[in-house]
Length: 427
Image 1: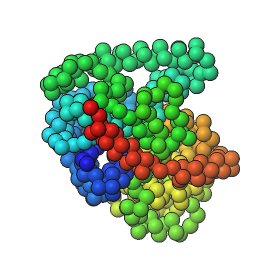
Image 2 (image 1 turned 30 degrees about the horizontal axis):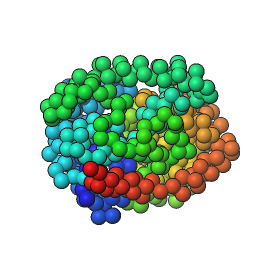
Image 3 (image 1 turned 120 degrees about the vertical axis):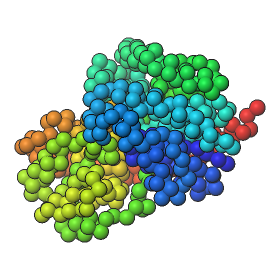
Image 4 (image 1 turned 180 degrees about the vertical axis):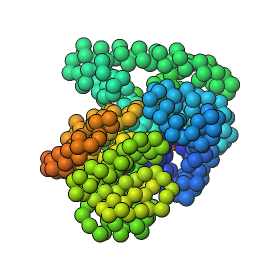
């Protein structure tokens, strides 16, 4: 059996696909990851085949004539930037590249944000297993996105009237996206011999989509009655649990004193951090706490008293030794902190990060705060309140215990193989 796994985005988008790919490969499936050029080396280092179907982030910035910090700021502040400058301009080339890889495939497993996966699956008559990494992307009227753009929606309405209101608002957004961008998708579909259907990227399921695997715990977001057919929340597939080693400087720092606060902005927002790390260092010092700052740089790890700065560390090996994790609310970081049982302070910048932060607060395992409010005495005060809240600590530990009983990679492999076998045997 051959499976093509397709994803775009940051490490939070990539790592679940590596975890799933490794689970499939362990069962004898021939796995190829179709990813942006940035991620080829990382996938191959994990023991999987990988081919580029999208340009690197640096190449996209060069095409736009801007640096990475400017591109990151635009993605944060301009809602349509990623779709209009990254996904759709690359759709024709990425679809052609993916089509060239798909010969002999039995199933395509694709991110909701990789529309090429659905086009190629339909063209080749293959089943599509959609991977949804963010609860927000289900756009449920029963449990709508908790974001600034969704302020008019009713949170978890109890009656049909409230759900009808949410459904109408979401329908308007879907229709707007379809009208604005459906033509670009239709033109690529036509180029591959498919009907010129104007499908809304992310919102509209693809014709051969047979299942949707939500790669987050149902504890964070249960599947709602209006979810697509075959939708299942399976847990967070974790890749870096034992595959990546801790930097020796970090290991020595962790062994050398009390648990530190970990500050991180993931692998994307980190390109435009503003004063986040300066504020983080000052807040930790004001509290008399040790801190690890994951800065996203390639600089050599450096220790300055009770502060350690380094570019990156495997979250699953670091977060479990943290007093708390302060982060941007990316779903990958959120899931890792939940697995570690760490109290979280979420500072959402854009997209699903607001929704993820609100869900963490709703679960009682952390707090969410606008980044602009994270400064001076307010930053240290918020952190002190988080660290002193024993209810949050106990709740986070209890949730972590439940998460560790989930089997997301095994479940994903089961569902993907089953989808391919059903498709083979169908008339």
